[in-house]
Length: 266
Image: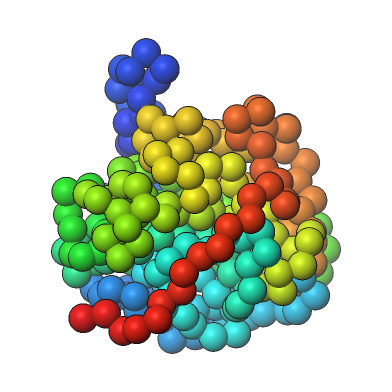
C-alpha cells in the first residue's frame, strides 16, 4: 500500500479542507545537495523512454523543479514551454527553488502501479534567497509502460503543497508575483506540437494553493493534485477523462519571453 501525505486546499468558500496528497513515498536513493541552482549527475531511469523521437535512459535533476535530458542545467527563470528552446525538459514546477534554507530534493528508481519508474520529490522546498516562510512539496514520476508500446512512458505530476511561485531573482516578493512558475514539458525545439503547458503557468497567483488553477486542487484524471500524460514518442496519448475547462491542457496556449540567467548569483 502506498503512503500518502496530507495536504490542505482552499475551497471556493475559503475553507481549508484536508485531502490526501498524491505524492508517494520512495524514489529517494539519491539526494541532491542543499543548494541554489544546482543539478545532479546523470541518473539512470531504469528503462528507456522515447521522448519526441529520441530514446533516453538517463536524466538530470535540477533543484529548480524540473529534469532535463542530455545534460543538466541550472536555469532558474521559468520559460514558457510554448516556443521553448533548449534541453528537452519535463517541468513539474519550473521556478527558483532554494534548498539552502528549507527542503530536500530526492530521486531514484522504484515502481509505481506495478511498473518500473523513476521519481523526483521536491519535499518542503523554499525559494530564493534561502527563504523558509513558504514551502512547496511536489513530485515528478516517469513510469515505463511497455505494455502500451516500446519506449512509451507516463509523466505523472503529483502536488502536495504549493505556497510560493517565484524567487526574488525573478521579481517576486515573499515568494509571490514576478515571473511565476511554468508546468509541463517540451522537446526544446520551439516548434509547434512539441510541448504541453498547463494553464496558469507564468500567471501570478494562478497555481498556488487557493489560486484559480491551483495545482493541489486541479487534475486531469480525477485525482486532486495529480496530472498524468501518456507519451508515445512524445505525443500525448491519454485515455483519461477530459479535464474541466479551468484545467484544460494545451499547446500553443501562451507564448512568453523569459529572461535566462545572465550572471552567476552569489
